[in-house]
Length: 231
Image 1 (cartoon, one colour):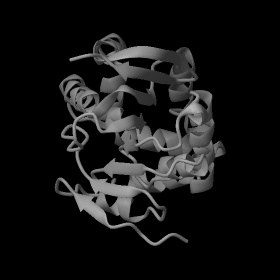
Image 2: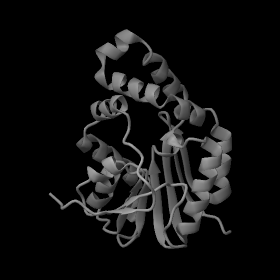
Image 3: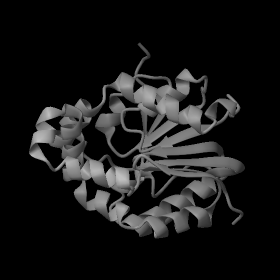
């Protein structure tokens, strides 16, 4: 097991997720399942073609399973940013860790090759203004040929169906993973549904700051990969 990395501090920690959400998160996927999912996503967007010396930061990294997926693909210059010290402290890999707010990134200008966020932006308290601040910061810290990778929930017929089924008590009792998902959505409902309600403004902001290389909406999520536009 790797020694636990020291946590750098940009901002004050926020309390870890509420216990009900946390329990549901643990029931939804094991760490090994989450690492495997992230590896598959990274491969699908072509991460295996990125230079192994790339400076990569994962925002809203939580327990760091995305960082572990990147490490397993051979990337070594890794950093994770999250506002929960509890979640960061549970990571046991080689990456640098920062206790920080994604709306106030403090990396040097044009210092990073890749910035990734998987399921973190829909937690922003004030969806569009906070997203604007975050995207400006990401664009500032990326090198001109760098990439911004976003994977977030997205309103599709599939997601609408899953959410509808998750409100059926018998279905939740019959399938533990569905119950875990439903519980997480219930606990983060305010930001989750606000995010789902603004697809066009969100895409407009992403496209305004990043030249799109890949946009895909499938199975209830958006995958966006883009390079920073010139200031």
